[in-house]
Image 1: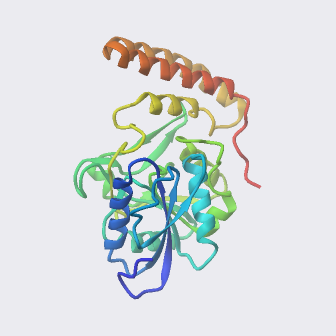
Image 2: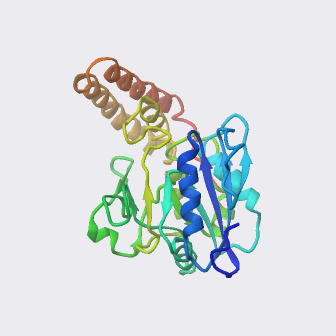
Length: 301
């Protein structure tokens, strides 16, 4: 537990680890350096089983067997934190480094009326550098999410429609009501699913400029380089969060054309085996999405 300031422990933090321990160590160092007055308890959920040595002393490690995926890991980490006395439950990819003051900003943001989830700007290289996220929305015409990246958007607090799973804070009550992530998603689009379920329950999703962090994008999954792993899993889960079935059928038709065009584009633009692997991954993923088309999104009790 970090004791940077003598304030009470109000932020429960879950960091999901997989692969190289180096990004995870950087993530926890940033949490240790956060001068927020809110005390914190940090749980690292180890999906790799390789944090036996060198785990940061300020965090506890929860090891999960057989890598159940990102959402299931977050659920397990928050369960380990338990019920008490959190103002904010903070979820971080291991390739996130928060800026000082992040935890206090998260606790303040969730005190707003009806705010269930809050997030702030994610920069790619340094605070104030290139933006990866400055608020998000769902494009209902295409069934995709959009992420703002402009300086103007980054500076405005506002209600939004989508918050990525990379870095966010959720109120304990919103998490309890939603039941957390749908653990049947292995990776990608579980954040879209959670956001939509929370919005259906009337919770606000808040973007605040004060929750600043750096995203070392794709340090584990290869998302920055559009790896075949990323392309397949992103396509495989793209349709799942939406309802009703008629809308998913519409999206299936739309995305079938998109998948074919995107696969052809990779095959033409990226030469050799890399292009063929990327194209095959897109088509495999979309095939999986079509196969699961009749599986309805989770409805919270």
